[in-house]
Length: 606
Image (cartoon, rainbow, N blue to C red; front, side, top):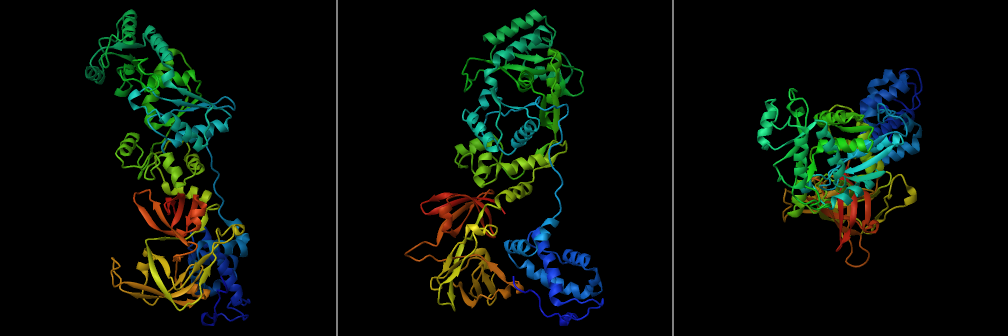
């Protein structure tokens, strides 16, 4: 960084002379104190230090300088500008090397973690994740995956994966394996796996017992007529028929004497309940569509509330986590528990989470894939876990997000920024750095004869990883990003990062970069002191010679909002092949491989 101190005589500070407080304060001493707090503040707050915050730190450490507040403000402002002009990785390096004691002064993070489960004891907790196999898992499913898995780990319990596949028209046969793969990716390993389509005889046995207890009835009313009576708090005419008649109709349902829609099994509740949703509800109905796993073996299928209550009891669930939108379902299921004399699990309802800016609905995604609108379940525009993985989002970041949210009953909006921040903490220490030039524009160079060589580190925190070598041949020119070029002014000085300084010579401009446009750069040396002037630092890539080792590779970056950025990336990206890297000043991307001389990457986040 060099000596950021200038002569302070104009500010009323004389080197080695007494200041207004009667103490000795040299220029160097003042610069050092201000500089260390400016660097610390910049590292803590995204590369941009605040003059006010730095002044506060300085005055807290050196209160005897308070009489010089006006002069100190001018000094602090200048040094803060100089620090803010440095790349974040350089700021971090300076803090670690020159002021390591300040690394311990970051605010301590509040303790986080899940709150204890009520009525839970180690070794006796059984919980479940129960998806419908209509497609792979998406980011919305991960709340249930993470919370159940975390609590099971906390109490050394058992995690059950239950495939709720009792709607044959909504089952995707491939989803069974995809869900298991997605759970493995999330690091959640179920102790037992069940398929509801294998458990029909159990459902039939419980249904018969409920009929025998007078807690259920077979209804042959038209659906709309039954709903109308329910809304009016009126009993269905079949509700109080003798048990023998109910059992006879039940056997007719099983035996195929009723067609789809002609009969159903209904659970009795309280018809006077002010909430219509809690009045009698359907438990079993006839479905004549074949099932992907069992074909036409069964034709009477359980509905959600019935199968879930039966399975949660028989699988020994101790705690059931679900969203507040399931409150009515919980109350319905409790009727079955009471009728059967079963012990209820602990029901916990967490708040609703709304997710914006991502496609989650399985049927919409499947239709889009079939129409060619999406490339597959891992299309980066989607919210599937396969898309998250393709973008380089780590499962540990997703897990941390839901642990932080916990099981609070408040409704929230899912924060992508928070998820990306957690992911950044994971990938930043291991992601190699490289230059990417989007929409490249070629500029000629004059004033330099010999090749200019830059050796930026592969990672600022890992010197053992070595350096990249970027060799710029002035006779061939240089590639710059269109976004940077559009910001240039004729005659201004810029710095090609880690290389040298140049003066912009610009002819023509405009949004279309018309035929009159030309750009050249005049080499002016490698004086680092120009950074104090706040000049632009831009990324660049050399023009590859027609023969010999290639310096760059074409690259396309798939964007989660749709579309792609195209440009050039360092040739080293082709050697890495796959994995998360950081395109400096652009963002983290996940390299997906090279095909026909073009590297494809998926954008992760800033």
